[in-house]
Structures are given as structure tokens and as C-alpha cells.
Image 1 (cartoon, rainbow, N blue to C red):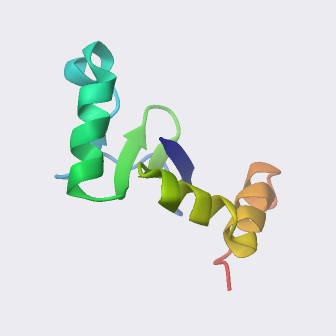
Image 2: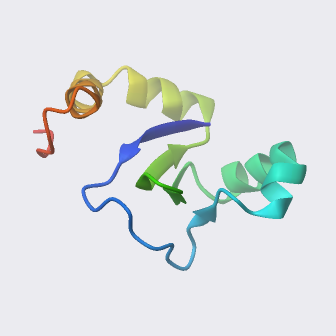
Length: 89
């Protein structure tokens, strides 16, 4: 499971369908939860406490595709370095 980075509206409250990263079942049996998430779809939105909304990619091939996309990787690196938000183009 890989977090792609926060969305442009950090510190948002969870919305219906979001992954609750503090959910007791996820903490107790993460592999079962990850399996169900992968079956439903590859990309999920979650709210990380103290950080805000993030996108989580759950399937190996999709994680590889995301990490090999230079536009997305550069976007994440720039944001992490504190350069700020701008849409990858």
C-alpha cells in the first residue's frame, strides 16, 4: 500500500467511502482489509490524522505505474520539499 500524497485540500474530514486509517479492524487485521480494498478498486481516498486527505494505491502494478510516472513523482517531490501545490501537467 502506497500513499501518493495529500490532496490539495488537507485536513478535511472523512467522507463516505474513505478509508478510516484508525479503524479497529484495519489495525487488528490489516492484510484482510487490504485484500478487500484491492478487490474493490486500486485507488482509495483516506484521511490521515494530522495530515489530511491522501490517495492510497493498493495493487502492485498500479503502484509501479504511479512511481514510474515522472510527472507524478516530481509533483510529490516538490510538494514534500515545501515548494507548494500546483497541478501536474
